[in-house]
Figure 1 (spheres, helix red, strand yellow):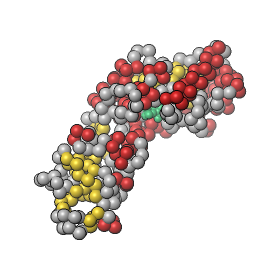
Figure 2 (cartoon, rainbow, N blue to C red):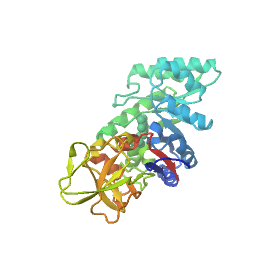
Figure 3 (cartoon, protein in one colour):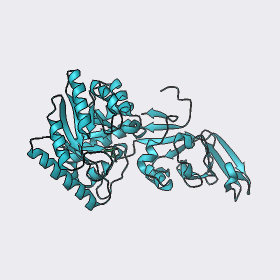
Figure 4 (cartoon, rainbow, N blue to C red):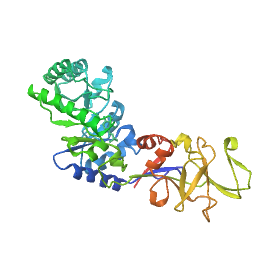
Length: 369
Ligand SMILES: *Cc1c(COP(=O)(O)O)cnc(C)c1O
């Protein structure tokens, strides 16, 4: 990474990422496998670049949402155990089989098709059955018909039904338990029919930390690995594995009454020192952080003033002495350094933490240390 040509970077700390991964692995214990969720380019951190660190620190599976994401990882290594959490259209299932990728299955038809493709290739394709326990996104409903279908899938010669899983809506503790209990009942019914599953999984980051029973024998964690503490009742001391940084491109001194940015939505009330930072909404910074969020300069808060532009925004550094062009600005960092954390940014932007991370666009160079 010699030439990055830009001051705006997402710094990814592989050591912290590895520490977080080990912490999660230790939390769940040796009986529970960790599926590391690196969909959406590893929540923006770079799936291909972080995969080895995760595998070396305890991940047993790498999960993505789409086939394209899986194939990018497969290109990097033939050895990664890869899992697709989402739907793959029929006409691309052959790529899944050829890539030795484990596919989520929620229909008999797709299972039969995949079985046929696997047979043609002389292999056994791995699948996990997804059950819909209330979320109503993907999954077999918990019906008699589904049970019959799943038993049929289980007995297809060229499929290995390696796992079964569902996903929490995280509505409330009571709703979680309802989902979980109906899942357990259904899996037991399948076991009564001699359908056994190597991996049974339900919990995402939040559920894994909050309720140990939800871990079953595998957890699917994304946010937690990256150091996002989204849990409610439990606790794990993971640290942010990334930091979004830039450098001041220009400093202006303005007089009371002068405006800043489109529509002059900010007007100086005192002689002000303001600094332009080369990051904007096309880098994935929420536009509604204009006149709302803040960056950290020299360990102090510098409010974002005016409307955020596509490629730049302006901060008020009047109260921060000796600011200068080329000075480092932290956009997402730690609370101790007076930067917006992912959590704070998500609240100010009225969205969730994962979106704040995942929306950082490819224009921002990722730098690994
Ligand atoms: C994204 C995703 C996860 C991981 O969610 P986190 O909250 O980031 O841990 C787990 N399971 C499924 C099905 C997902 O889509």
